[in-house]
Length: 241
Image 1: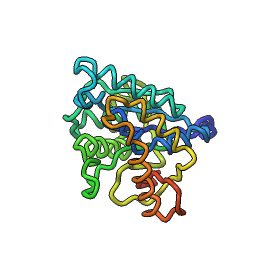
Image 2: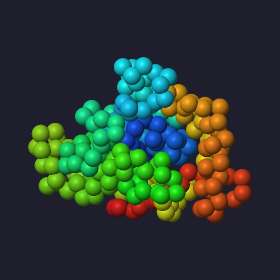
Image 3: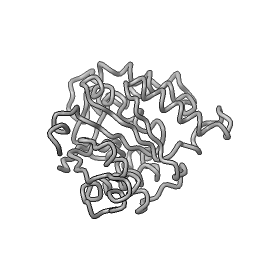
């Protein structure tokens, strides 16, 4: 790491399978990070092309969900939103190609912290165990360690693209069955709601969104020992430096 990199703002790369994954699980935390001066980038493996509830014509769902994600990210202060091009919603698998593509973006962004989905299924929240989520989480973990930091992994990234190895310091996993860290986002809950409202194609009952999230985040607060009345987003936080 160069002296300039050591003094630069903390950089965060959030990697998820679909538009809305980061925002449902961590929009409050992202909003706090941005307010603290961190530089946050979103990377979506798919465009969510098989999502939605019929409110958007199928030939428009990709462009719609991309726009929704960009608007939602901007509501949190995130301007850098990227999408991979070769992965279809519902078909994400852990492959060398996906690990390479994630490694490429890690080396481009050079984040100190990576936020992604849990590769472990939570059987008490089955909907969080979408196969794309699990595959994205596992591929991200493999990209963080050892691929991104190993100059001999995917050597073409150096020889052809000039992307030197990079060591990520922290990995934060969303929707993990055994979280060890809670972020109190009570003061930015309204920002989280505003961001999620941009994902209109994914909200069949938008009027119940706030109540559902408040209930879930209250349970997270209780589980992690936060004071009564607080709202918490939970993570498994791992030191990988």
